Length: 207
Image 1 (tube, rainbow, N blue to C red):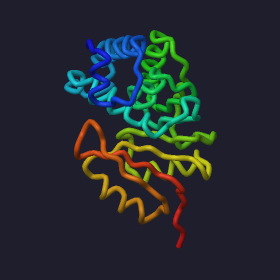
Image 2: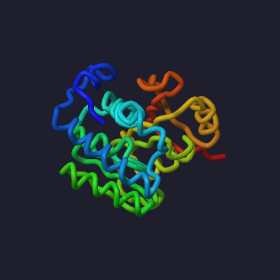
Image 3: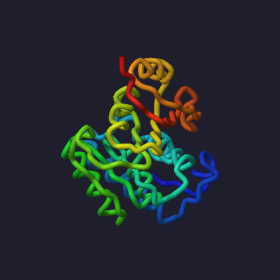
Image 4: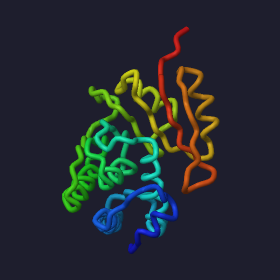
């Protein structure tokens, strides 16, 4: 994988991406390509579109998290999307939560090779105890399940930022059956059928 600053300017012109950051994304790609053969981190066909499908798709949430020191958790991060991508970009206080031990070992190797600071936790998200400013997830679970998890790890001012595909409206309606929440829909820069759902004020419905 080789890219230039112009590539990022095409999709996210508002971002400032250093050459060192681009180099680290290349390290990330090479490790993912090597490890994917053994532990199936991502669908093989998406590696040909790694920059758009994984890097740009993850980086677009930068538009919604202004402070690089924000306390962030990425639930069910898998191969590190979006949390590890954001850590490489420069967010300094991210916790990656992944229940699969092999995947957490991969994440640790990427963090070591790119020399970034990120906390990697091998456990189920249901067992988290800390509260966060932002709760992230990309294709990890249904919106209803994500709201349940967010409700456990957020405070009144917390925000959830969730990548969702073409079924986003159905997921919102299903989530409304059990949860009160405010939300905004933002267009995805990588897929016209997908949305970024920004969620606030989550509360369980009773009765």
